[in-house]
Image (cartoon, rainbow, N blue to C red; front, side, top):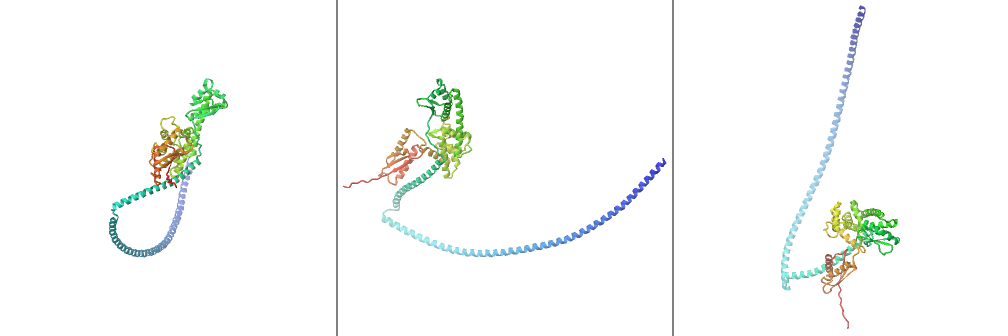
Length: 514
């Protein structure tokens, strides 16, 4: 046991000695290292202080140089501005001297004008006195007072003025007619170039040709079943008479008549004619006609250049393809009115799109007037309001027959374009009775006017030639007579287009040599 303890004790003593020796060595080495580091730090601080001092001196020198340079610049700028101020002062002094001289001249001129005014006032007073003396002498010589002389002169001047006014009115009217006719020809020519529409009189019947007369019996069918089926499904009357190889379709609804015509043509080509086949064919023809109506409406809007129309309005426009007015196709008429209104709006610098849109839709009510109560104008207003058209378009449509007051110039143009399109030769037809009554009324209006000897309606009622009484109406007054008669015609007669009033005055002197 003692052998083990003694080595352990010796080991511990050696360990403690080793630790003490290591500690002392490390302390010496650390103190030496710290001393070196402190010396290096002191050297670095001294170097930094020397460098900072040097840099400080350099910056002070640079600042002094910069301040000197800026002071030089400021002094130079001050000298320049002082020179400019001195120049401006010299210019102001010169201007003041010039203004003083002008003021002196003005004062002299004012004195001269004042003196002239005084002289003029004196002369005017002298003239007034002389004029009074002359008037007194003239009254004594003429035997008339000033009022009497004034009345005589005024009467004479009035007569001369009336004569001059009549002559001037005649000249102005002639020039206006020449210019208006020229401009109207240009506009109408342009419209014709854009819209060369065919105007063929349409009737309320359609004729379907047959390959042979035997087909009539097949169309009638056993006990008339086929013809009754066709008439029931289409609402159109079939007239089968002695006309060779033809069947007549009669009806006032052009759409139904077209469906019936297409159906009958298909049945004739197919050859299978019985009620079931008839029903199938009619349904197919109805779809085709609806497609044609839609295409016609879209084509009309494309031709006129109007977009963003409601689809239902486009369909109604297409229905006008099968609607006629006095034999004139309403769709072609509407397109022509749109072109005419657009041209006139362009010439006047107005809204071309509005004029075309209202012109195209002005007869839209005729597509439904056989289905609803009321005039086509009222129906058209309801339709356009329903499909959210603007007030300007609605008013343009409503005012084209004078039923409503036009609220824009475009509305007036629609009415004018409608009259132009309807009045073109061949565009419409009217019955012989109404035509004769219109001619008689036209001559009656002229003959009942004071100063008219006789009158003649010519050019299919588009011109009336009037023979004036030469002893009652002078050459200067015939222009006023023509104007009066034209106003009477406008107020008392309804007519498409315009009527030319031509007044003729003739004076004859007859003598015989014996």
